[in-house]
Amino acid sequence: MKILLRLSLLIPLFWAVTGCNSLNYYAQTVNGGLQVLIKRKPIDKVLQDPAVDAEVKESLRQILVMRDFAVREIALPDNDSYRSYTDLQRDYVVWNVVATEELSIEARRWCFFIVGCFSYKGHFSEQQAQSLAQELTAKGLDTYVYGVDAYSTLGWFDDPVLNTMLKRTDTRMARLIFHELAHQKVFVRNDSAFNEAFASTVERFATERWLEAGHGGTVDEFRAALQREDEFIDLLLQTRAKLETLYASGGAQQELRATKQQIFSELIEGHRSLKQHWQCDKCYNTWFDKDLNNARLALVATYRHWIPAFEAVLRQERGDIKKFYQRVKEIADLPQSERYQRLQALLPARAS
Image 1 (cartoon, rainbow, N blue to C red):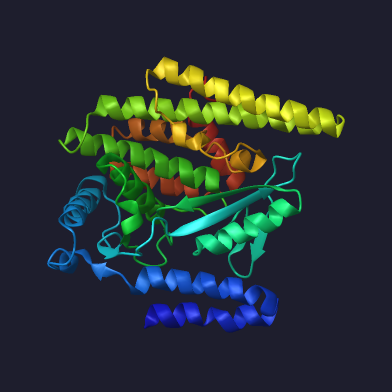
Image 2 (cartoon, helix red, strand yellow; image 1 turned 135 degrees about the horizontal axis):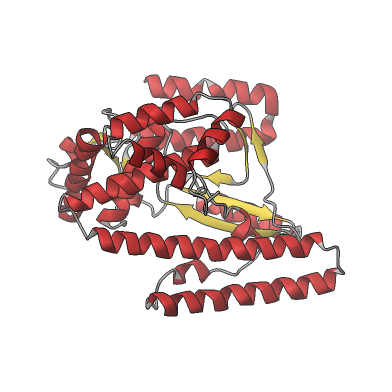
C-alpha cells in the first residue's frame, strides 16, 4: 500500500504541470513500475510453489547465494533487494526509444517532471515504443528501440529479481547484482561517470571473488570476457568519433550521407577483425541484428575512464573492501571539480 500511495500521488502533479497530452505517458510509467513492485513475491515462498518451473527455482536459489555473498564478502547492502521475484510474463521489462537527427550523433532528450531529462524514452509496452519510433522515423530521424531485461530503482524500493533477468548466465547475473547493489552503497547525483566507474569496479572485484570461491567459470575466462567487452566498446567509440567529426565538417548532405554509410561499413569490418583476433565467431553478433544508424551509437559512452583510479584505491587498501568504500565516500563528498582532481591524481600515467 505504501508503494501504491507513493507512486500514485505523482499523477495529480503530472496533470497539473503537463496536461492531458503527457498524462498517458506518466500513467503508463507509474503503472509499469507498480506492476514490477506489487507482483513481487519473496523468493523463499516462490521456491515452495509447486507450480514454478524447476529451472526457475534453481536460478533463484543461485541468486540468493549471490545475494548472501554480496553482503558477507563484499559488504554490500543487506536489504530486501533481489530477495523477491516478479514474473512479468514477457521478455523485457521496458523498451527504450533513442532518436537522433539524420546527420547528428546527439540523442534527442526527453524531459520529465521531477525526474529530469534523459537521452531515451522508456515504455513498459513494446507496441507503444515501436509506435513512437515509427512516428519519429517518419519525421526523418534515426531511431532505435531496444529491450531492457533489468530494472533498478537505485535503492528507492527493494528491487525484485525479474523473469527477464533469468536468461543471463550465472556470471552475468552476479555482475548485475553486484553492480546494482554498489549503486546503493555510494551514489553521487548527476555524476554518471563517477557512479558507473565505481559500480563497475565493485562489480569486477566482487565477480572475481565470486569465481575464486568456486562459483561458475574461472577468473581467467572472466578477464578475457572483460577484455573483449572493452575492445568492442572502444570500436564503437571510435566509430562514434568518426561520425561526430564528419557531421561537424559542414559538407554537402549527399556527401555526408555517403560517408556515413562508409563509416558504418568500416564498423562491420572492424567487428570482423576483432572476432578473428578473439577467435570467437559469435561474439557481439547480435549487436548487428538491426540496421546501423546514428541512434545505435548515440548512447555509447565510456564510463570506464575512472575505473583505474578506483582500482588504485582498492590496491592501496590491499583489497579491504570496507576501507575502500570509506575512501570512495570521502571522494564522493567533494565538489565535482575536486572529486575529479582527486581521481585524476590516482590514474596511472597511461590512463590519464
